Amino acid sequence: MLTDSHAHLDAAEFDTDRQQLFCDMQQSGIDRALIPGVSPADWAKQQRIAAAFHCPYALGIHPWYCPADIPAAVCQLAEQLQQHLAEPLLVAVGECGLDKPRANFPEDDARRVGWEQQVALLEPQLALAVQYQLPVILHAVRCHAELQAILQKYPGCYGVIHGFSGSYEVAMRYWQLGFRLGIGGLLLDASAKKLRGAVKRLPLAALLVETDAPSMTPVTLRPARNTP
Ligand SMILES: [Zn+2]
Image (tube, rainbow, N blue to C red; front, side, top):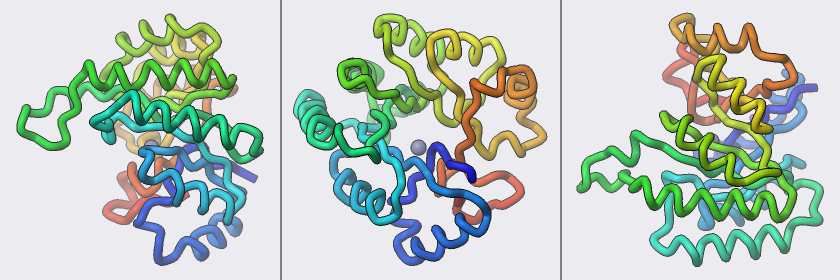
């Protein structure tokens, strides 16, 4: 049986047919999916769905959902981790990370999240992962040098770079830092030469399979939502 290591199966896109989706997954030999957290507002629904379908889950705050009051949200995360730490289904912190293009959006674009805010949201989540000895699920878009410099400040921090699309050299540096690479549908795109080249050369132990459902639909299956 396979595990999809990153699928947002709590997303509204699955609200109408989630039961059927899990039946289809079983039929396809996919045992379960790790459901990452993205925002405090969504954790309760996510935990409900993880429990109902026996899926492992992570709690964290995604850089796209950076709260106005970062310290308060981090406190909330610490409380939730503390409260659920003993549960076998709580397996990681995340997803959290850095997204350079979002920091470069125009000032008046509501989707913009400043770089300093992103770093201020990420670092305490890395510290919590180390404190609770949990792996961390990282979202990393066009920021590998900066992210690797930050990770070096948190020895004992380990986990996965989800939706990886970089080079072999970048991947090996993450692997040396204690991180696996989450490989998704982009691998099915013949034009993704850098990623395909990296995956061919990386140790198998460094790779995890993921979909990032409902996002990241492979090019051959668009425009449908993505599923495990
Ligand atoms: Zn994700």
